[in-house]
Length: 456
Ligand SMILES: Cc1ncc(COP(=O)(O)O)c(C=O)c1O
Image (cartoon, rainbow, N blue to C red; front, side, top):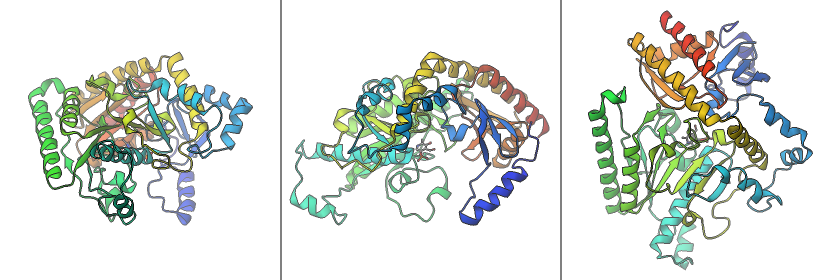
């Protein structure tokens, strides 16, 4: 239970101070990171929350995990933490080994090329560039040299140096807030307003009805409708000379409201990408790293072959992307920035992967997710006037409240009950606990939610 109002007086005081020097409209709580532990986050007012949102889904092992703290006992690691290299040019002697024993260890099947970046947006932004380079190389028939005209025109943002390629994305998608990513982000107007953008194709994402088993006809119809739209948009844009070079999609649309699509939808989308010659990028920034019970959510889809590119960040601690070999640029500096990630994050990831394996955490995500799912289904039957549409994979679970005000009331009252959950879309509550979230934590969540629903 919270011991003050939430936000409490200390958070409010600190917020006032911060607001004097920067815009702080998104600040929710000031946190005591020294004393937060495991699944529990402590705020500066002394309120202790079971955290099922975990820094917007980005803490793989909760707070102050002992195995991560122990990394700092090793002087080699301390030097890695303070000497941040420009990795694209001056990697350390063991960088390749570290990549092999971390990111490559858990790479999606068939994707053994890799690029590290710092955050989700720059991972997508650079993966988009990789798609364009791949497409252009294909159009050149594999010729690697550029023409003089291409070299001149690219300097002034004109064709043929800067081709009029596009990327197809989906309504409700979130791929980040940088300029290229923003052109493929369509979850909330506040992210996009006032920013010039690109006329790229945007298809509907299926809108399913729940429970799935009671709405198979509607949901299959949604798959068909959206895939027909994808095909028709590719055709229209290609015909107009705005060639669709790639399709970008989240395996579960997260910020946009935890919208799911079936394995068949993804299989057919991949097929469509193949037949139209476009690349398929799966954005696993939020879904990757284990919360769905598999390391990568797209592993649930039984795709015929690996996606062309998979981007990651959040629970993976470093950003970046995996890709097929043909998506590597053919020269240095084409995909590049100063840091290209951070070795300290990769050291932490090595440890996280060991802990995931040692403690069987993917299995635990499935088990804890089961408890959440069943508990929530019981509650949506008991309180149909308040919540519905329970959905999820592993602990990556969400449900809807009737409207935004009710959703916000549920999240607010959960805080008073000592539960920190998040929202997404306009009326959904999303659960994003870390991988150390156990079935008994799931029971606590369900119990507290029931208390809240009884008060509405
Ligand atoms: C699916 C997805 N892609 C990209 C991003 C952008 O990541 P970042 O906020 O690290 O730039 C997010 C962030 O929430 C995300 O959920």
